[in-house]
Length: 464
Image (cartoon, rainbow, N blue to C red; front, side):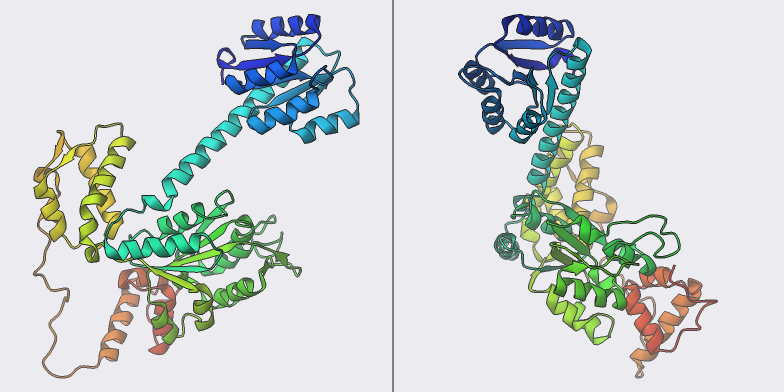
C-alpha cells in the first residue's frame, strides 16, 4: 500500500500532540482523519475505510482500551497503534491482548512513529491479502464448482454435502481426470476445517524410500541426507485435511504404518521414539480397483476398510454425457476470464462432435481442450474449425490389440508373463518406467514380477 493511499485515523484528546502528529503524518504522505473523542472516532471508523488507527490510551468518555476492543470487533484486520505516557508492562500487555498491533510510549520522536505506522500498514496489507486469498480459495473449491446436473453427479453432490459436515474418512474412486482432488477440496472447504490447512500428497510421485519421511517427518540424522529435522504431511495438516492421492501406489510397509497412524491418531517421526498427537481428517483417492489389489496382496484389506468409511465414486465423462454442455460452457467462461478474453459462443456442431468423442481423459481432457480452443479461436464463436482433427475424427475401428489372437487355446498367464518380461527388458529392468508403460501401479508390477519369477529379467531390476 502506498503512503498516498493509506488512510489513518488519529485519536487523542491532547490537542497539541494531535496536531503535531497530524502534521507529521500528512507530511509523510498519509491521509489523516483526527478525532479528540473516542466515541466519534468509532463512528468514523465504522463509516469510513481506514487502514490504520493511532489512539491514545487514557482518554475521557471512552478509554483507549475500550476503543481498541470495539474497533477490533468491527474490523479485526485494521492495525491499531496505542500511544500513552503511562508506558508500563501491564498497560502494554492489556493493549496487545485487546488487539493492538503495537505500543509506543510518550515521548517519542517522528522517526519512531513513522516506522511503526509503516510496519502496521504492511501488516494490514498482508492480512487483507490473506483474506482475499482465503475468499478466492473458498470460492474456487466450493463444491458448487464441481459442475454437473446428471443423476450420477447429483448423487455425488449429495454424498459430498453429507460428509463435509463430518470428520469421517472418505475414499474417492474414479478414473484419471474425473476431478477427485477437486471433490476432496470441495469437502474440505465446505466443512468445519475450511480455515485450516489442506495438504495433498501424491503417493505415486514419491519414491518408496522417501514416502514415509514425507508422510511422518524425520529428525536430524534419521537417514542419509536428513541434515535437519522435518515435519511430515500429517503434522502439516494438523487441524485440517490430508489428501492422499493415488493411495494404491503406497508400498505395503508404509500402508502398515499409515494404518497405525489412523488407528492411534498419532505419528512418530523417523528416528524418534515419542509419538506426536495429530488431528487430521483423511481423504484418500484412487484410480485403481483396490479390492482387486487386495486379492493380489499388494494392498491391505484392513487399511481399505479404514479408508473407505464413505466411498465416493466419480463417474467417467463418457457415462454422464448429458453434462457436456454445462461443463463446456463452464470451461469456456473460465478460460476466457483467465486470459482476459470475451467468452465465445459455442456452435451446435461442436457439441455434436463432443457427444461422439470417447473422452478417455475425462473432465480434465475436456477442460484442456476447451482452453486451447478459446485461446486459439479467431472469432466470437467456437466452430468445427476450432476443434482438433483428433477429436473430430477419433479412430473407432482400430483394434486395441497389436497382435492377432490364435484360434487354438492359449494360456493367459503365459501371455501376461511374456508381456511383463519383454517390457522389463525393453526398459532395462526399471520398475517405474515399466509400470507406466503397462498402465499399472508399481506395487502391482512387483507382485507380478514375484508371481512369475521375473526378478532377473532385464539387465537389473531397479525401482527408479
